[in-house]
Image 1 (cartoon, rainbow, N blue to C red):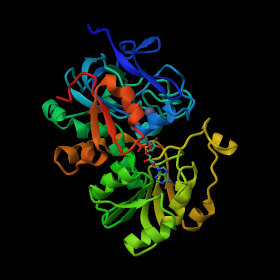
Image 2: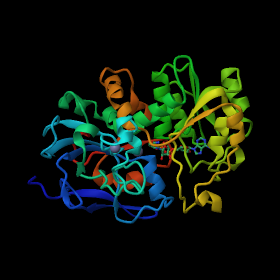
Image 3: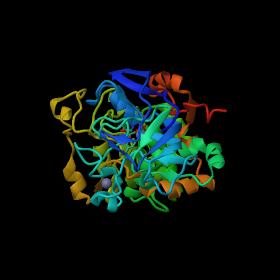
Image 4: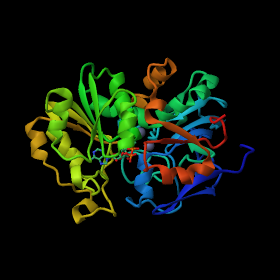
Length: 399
Ligand SMILES: NC(=O)c1ccc[n+]([C@@H]2O[C@H](COP(=O)([O-])OP(=O)(O)OC[C@H]3O[C@@H](n4cnc5c(N)ncnc54)[C@H](O)[C@@H]3O)[C@@H](O)[C@H]2O)c1
Ligand SMILES: [Zn+2]
Ligand SMILES: [Zn+2]
């Protein structure tokens, strides 16, 4: 047993509200039984995600009292009896998906839809509504089960702390943006449209460049976020402006469609042009079918929900959207949805960071804050330039 007993974390207390509260120190247990395959981590860094904002905006059925946080990097302070290949002192990246490593889907590499970690549906995550009730890691300490299977150990702890602003993004948005591009078929010479210039969109744009895209166009209605995308070589489209999307794409590419389309917005999408203040949940999916070449692929990391209590109409409250699906069918599009299976990508993307092949923290504008600044971080998330807030609970990063 560990000598430390105190712990604090970011807790969702109702729509629009988060608080830093004292929470239980994690134990190596799953309900009533011991979790011998788990570890306890001292959290080195833990990021605020656009996905957390869906809950905090009251757009999900998240229960009050949920400890938030699914993007975790930590140092192991205690190992369960059956952890064989990790040890106390290792610094590790935690994939946001919790995966047993034993079920049919895990064996096929589909760790985002593990069958054994969430009684309600396939797939689980730390600190997230409908994702199994696991305690989140926007906290000082957290428990991670199935440690050997889930965790990515950084080769050198000192080097890891030096590059932590980049490595912290391996728990979610870098693999997620990369997966969006891979499933959209991005490769050398591709033309790519990324919908959304939030942290996931910016990570997808940097990923498209890493994959060799010829031209990456990012669309959003937030001018500061578009400027951030241009700062590392992307083209941009300001969706507040009226006019057809095809014309805007043609002005950049000389043709009216792209090879690959990545939706980094999800169900809280806004309409384009003069209606950009209004929500239109199917707008990005409809643009995807309109703007992607026949035979092209559409990556959809943006989140779509089965229940949206804050939706404008009854159908959208059940997650039913008004899509022109016939257009996608006629153009033989393929659509790739779901949680990113982080483990498919985190090791090669770690190597790309360690060997300076990508500047992902710069691309997504990482800002390091303390645990006590987390409440302000949630409040500031949406305004102005995209910031990827990284919480540093023990002052291990900021120095
Ligand atoms: N699939 C996964 O594994 C996974 C992982 C992480 C995040 N996500 C999801 O990815 C999405 C993006 O995350 P984020 O952190 O970047 O969120 P974010 O809220 O910061 O960014 C969304 C951006 O989309 C813009 N936007 C709204 N309507 C638009 C439209 N019609 N066209 C283009 N841009 C539009 C907004 O202005 C905003 O800048 C969220 O839905 C999040 O839940 C999914
Ligand atoms: Zn996330
Ligand atoms: Zn599994």
